[in-house]
Length: 333
Ligand SMILES: C[S@@+](CC[C@H](N)C(=O)[O-])C[C@H]1O[C@@H](n2cnc3c(N)ncnc32)[C@H](O)[C@@H]1O
Image (cartoon, rainbow, N blue to C red):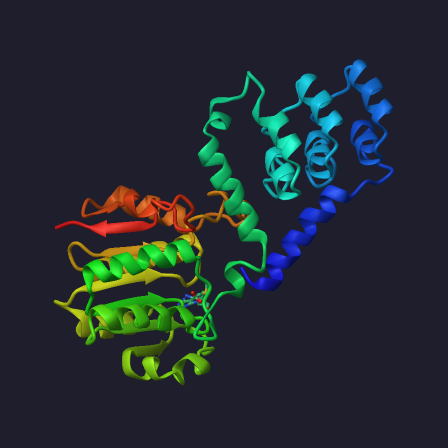
């Protein structure tokens, strides 16, 4: 997703929460207009708590977002669904956390009849952090390596660094060059552990001139222009890396069918004990970007159900927050 699209999504999210039109259902209208007494009357009258505005937000989501603790408490006591999600996938807990309302977080987390999933505090806080950081354009979309944009999550860079240091690959193949910051980043690490190692990066677009001008790129990175699934490119790669220690990082088009094709085409190139890192398995609601549609996670699930020489290495998720959940695929013999 581009930076502009992400900014737009965040804008929609905020607008949807702030929106209050005259056509809103009565409870939502009362909450949106801070008419606390009217809310109480409506609750006493047994009004439907789960009606939504046009953006899918319930009264509880709006109250949690706006910081109306008393209304949140009233809605929760009346039995409002604390798992409700608006059209962007935002729950009341996420709304309160996003806007920094710890008192409301406490109300939402201390209900005795909480579903089991809410008792998994660590998991939920991690997901909430994940969603907030994903939507904030100051985070991964602003990252650079040696001044070149690199759309990577620092936690996952760290884990990838550990993998590169352990495997000391002869080749790192990356699909999805973008500006080339990530290819140069992998080359920087590889240079320390295998001075003869090389990075090959592939993209349909030519955006990497700045990266190509860096001395480490000149020494260690091969930039290929074309589609990652082009048979000619696959043949060329197979010839070059055959019999070598190879690590593959998939970060091109995030549509399920494309990633699945990449998994089928690139998995034979991966050496035993090494990895395919399927990036951005977090989209399509795992837990971010619920509207994405089937993507890297679904491709990975299908691939893993069909092969027995790769498994998802969950130990690579030890930093808790990863943008590649289930995406560190290790090859066995
Ligand atoms: C998410 S960006 C890659 C980010 C980059 N790895 C980084 O960390 O900065 C995805 C890239 O995939 C490229 N892409 C899209 N379809 C592709 C395909 N069929 N083959 C190779 N690259 C593709 C896009 O042009 C885009 O530059």
